[in-house]
Length: 417
Ligand code: AMP
Ligand code: MG
Image (cartoon, rainbow, N blue to C red):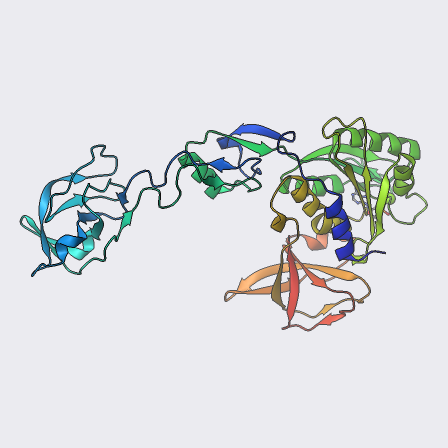
């Protein structure tokens, strides 16, 4: 049995990040939200494009204030609103009305804000002496044309999309989305679409829905392969077709030591390399991680297809996803390394946490901020088979191997999900 850290390393080492030349597509900027940039994008413009004012006020030459008895300047005729396209010139000893975003007149180097002035006839009186260069945004101060605005590997959130729009970038090259096949195995499973009454012993295949949601949230595309009976021939054929269509295959169920658990055996039969069979984690101990090269997969000739056989227990299946699969998707998708790992924070636990200490143990709960401090409240009646009990949770406390107890009021490590 491997440790969680060993398993995470094995998985990340198996993942080959997408090739920006092959595994990418060009999208209109409006459709690129949350995608990962597959090229450096340079700005063709200086930001700001010209010297301008960051306040409503008056533009002036700082040197004109040096030898004044009274702090006042003559007000030049005219004004400079945002969008005015004539560059004005400021005569010596004068100031000129300017508005936020207006182009700084030639000769001016400072803006005094309106609130710090008083107009008396043709003169402007200053309540305070401005500092030189105040409220002026200089051309190219934020970024010079020809330099990288957004770098390859960056996720395109609102800030990046807005910045790219301001740089007149209409199309972007982004990595394609990772394709993930989802297979549910088990004789007890019935598809949600099946309208027949449930027979004794049957349950709905909920893992398909939970995992598809997690896959989508991770920015990947879920390809459902339906529910498959614990039947070697049928399972083998579904696994083979999933491998042909996906970058990553996730199957749930059939990886324990039960008599109907065929996944590992079939993977070996079709030539997969099995790297992980079980992990010292609770829940989620049975975890099969395998890699395959498959000539049928035309997407990525050199890259390996990753296979994750996760437990059927709904809570365990999600745990395996959060702890191991999410990072693999991130790395494959070309995003920066800091996103390959789960995020952990420290939080005060509101109740005692217990673990047997033999495996790294993950306990569902709710993370909320009380007076600005993160507080973790574990769910009651926790069980790895009880998905219902985990409804509404947003975080998972982690207890390391050999850590059996965290007292209420003490700090716990909490994984954000
Ligand atoms: P297994 O890992 O196949 O031994 O399954 C462990 C438990 O998870 C059993 O109680 C199964 O009935 C349940 N289970 C397996 N697959 C699913 C599924 N797709 N959706 C919901 N529960 C499942
Ligand atoms: Mg099963």
